Length: 112
Image (cartoon, rainbow, N blue to C red; front, side, top):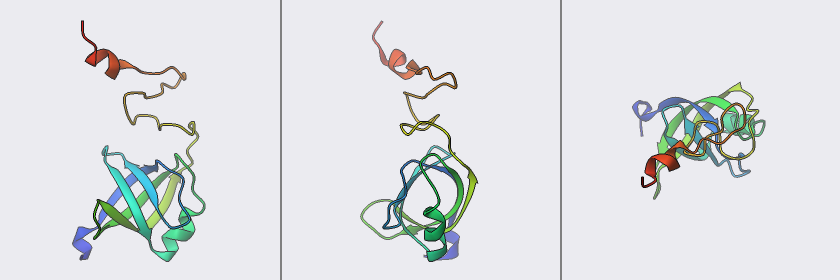
């Protein structure tokens, strides 16, 4: 695929990077990116990252059965300091800054 297929996003690491270059990223656009490959430079940078770190990435689609991506460029923006569980702002069990759970999605689906 050509350079026009590249995607540039700001994301948070949703999983610890794997030794085989794989990592799951949550984009600020709400989309999940499954990076299954990376360039050599990006692999070196991935080794220094951990769950929750914010990064700017350039991704290109990979031909595979699923929705796979290859990291071509990577830069850490912010060191994550949240708990090792779900990231803040990623679903119905979001954590509020005070540490309280937000179960609003469950309340919305409850029968009156």
